[in-house]
Image 1 (cartoon, rainbow, N blue to C red):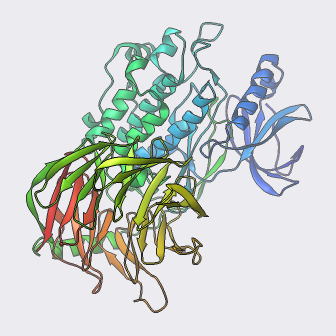
Image 2 (cartoon, helix red, strand yellow; image 1 turned 30 degrees about the vertical axis):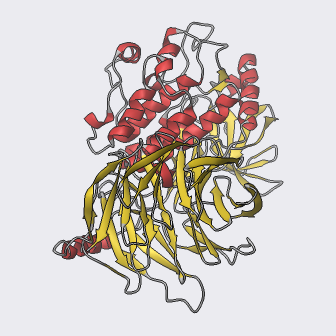
Image 3 (cartoon, rainbow, N blue to C red; image 1 turned 90 degrees about the vertical axis):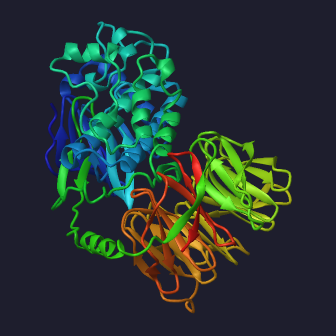
Length: 634
């Protein structure tokens, strides 16, 4: 095996140190001399370099990976031969691989696991769209890098990739390729494989991420092989009862023996995983929020120092990137203070009371809005519909089909607008006729929207904020931001949340221009609500609500510690309301005094949307119970 020492130069690369080695070669941290940038330099073992067949595969591996221009696939900078040595240079990533993460921290909390899976699924979908099957999806091939207040995930090792449907899972020697703990039954049987084999493997990875254990832990390889072919897929809740039932079902469906019984695509599985966890169906789908770097206190394991880890096993990392595991110096003081505060509030009366019975609506209700006249409109993600409820006599009056995966909804004076994440469109519904009057394609998935007279603003997953003219139903203006997430509009100020980097940006709604530099709000902000003096952000990672003033004359910024994982917000004339799906409660805050009012009110499971009407009533959706509940402040 070729060995390079510190300071050695290979082509355009100068070696700094070795960070890992495996059956294919050695991985070095290096510097690309011409550009002065750090790279992960993978040098192929000499025995393999002499193999003509492997050289051909190396060329294919490099080209395939380079052709997958996708944010969740590590970019290839260069590949070739220098001084008789084959090498490939890729982006140097700070983070860890999922296998090491599980070994260090234990099983991941559901929201974090769903976010990681969604990003892997996105990378797989890009490969599948090119007719390629990865065939070795496993935790060691999933790199998790800290970025801003969240995590960015990369899928590595496309060396086993083949064209889908044209080849079986067997080699010419009659051996299967892949890793036995995650290999699909059709690969073991030698049947033709397509992208659904990767879906099976990702289901196994999701199960392990949620439970800390592979789905079929058997004593020997023969028993494992037989289990993949014939045993019923396990349910994650059997080992981890705290896992949401729907998320456990996503993993089980992905592991079905018959490919036709699995998700039709990796994209479908990723979306289903996000939709199955509280806060994932909406905030998680807003780009990368669901991949929270910090687990809840009960699951967090403290790490000290900075450790340089190698991510290389046999055929395990095409990039072989060096990784840094960031330290967590949280001393638990904030959590202790939060516990004491919750104890002090326990004796207080509830913040509100439930009025009437929950109203059944469509499958997996998420976002909800109230029109100026008081009508209640609910986006049902699972049913791909919108439900209209008459608030005067609370009952369902209409169910209107819309686009795929409706994630957000907003009401103007005459129309209700729906953001369809699945088919990258916005649906416009006439309030009076309760029918669809326009469907507007966007070219990128919308993650939130905010309507006002004559205009609707839409945030898309490709970091744009679009202004749609209600007269023409056409995009009239585009504003670029660092990362587009939740939106809130008040007066002439539009607020855009960057959940990935923990920032909030304000836009002048008259000109469409960014009003100033992004302002930090904390770890994993989930939602934003706006009033005349500024905006409020729910900061899920910090367990706080934080205000952002609109001007220097506005009140000073406030931080209100509420504990748990505050997510969706509603702001009426007097109160700020927040859902917390970790505890299944709704919280009421007085924005003027900066204090909580009453104790958190328990509501039906998975509160995934909240809206406040002008009459003082508050409406909350339950993704678990497929219902909407009305609250009244005490």
